Length: 165
Length: 260
Image (cartoon, rainbow over all chains, first blue to last red; front, side, top):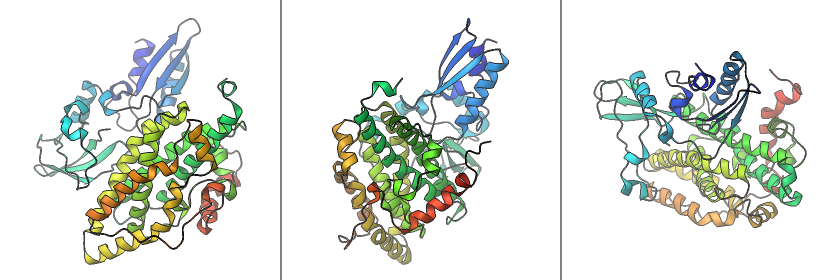
């Protein structure tokens, strides 16, 4: 496995079923074969995401094991969006029991264009376990910054939802 | 390398501006962290903890940038843990002691509404780091504002008791609001340099949002308060600030330079 593939295969420390590439936070890998160095560019999901330090260390470790020295740079702009998550990543999340984020392009344009609504928000999210659309939000914030907590009204199981941003 | 490219006076202004924004975020993150294990339900422990974490993330980048720009080379940790009260430039709203949950939601509604307009404006900042934080943060603070909005609606339009307490919370927060939107020497200079936005220009939209929520929550906007907080941007703080810093800084100061 070449170095780029090895770095791309690093799992997200909080949601280990998906890789940092699936998640869309791995922006660039520049390998200099002669100098045996690699420059990796990553983008945080949320400003305060504590997983970033773990990811940085993991990248350095993988590079070192392959005989390279790594420089990991964090870039804020353009800001990460859940649209960068790959289709494979979405499937893996669903299989793991986490509802994947909606794609912005899936949303109706007339909804997006409207000003901020002031009523209580109701969104439709599919249960990753039984496929029912009849689910409700338990908490807008879950175990990590990127997730919310929901429950299915059909199978009654609680599940995590990857928030769409 | 980056430093050489920047005109010093503009860099000084940008550094001071980063400190204002970073200190607001840092100090409010500290207050929100106090809610963990104290919120009315475990979901709110997580919610307020998560919101605080977003703000801490914003503060870390902004304080790091301030240290780069001001020429002292201070790190985010040195700026957070080794400055004294008079060297912090946050507004009084964020340093006020934690009260009941209604107070927190009133404070968050105002602060997040302010931050939403602020970061929307800073997306075009001439400072790349500030613009980068803004692009990221604008989505985060929109979620915070939405969280506060939902609770203000629920509590205002809830039981007789929750209605009264939510109204009291709005009254209690009111004297601290105008300071957020007041132009000071640093923000005026930052706006002129294209680095920042004028706080006063954010008022109309932020106020519009808050008053819409308050109205829908069957609450009333408080009458103009008889006093307004002031001085935070110049480093003059209210009584709770010293206690907050003592708690936030004591480990860093007891073990200078410690790392793990």
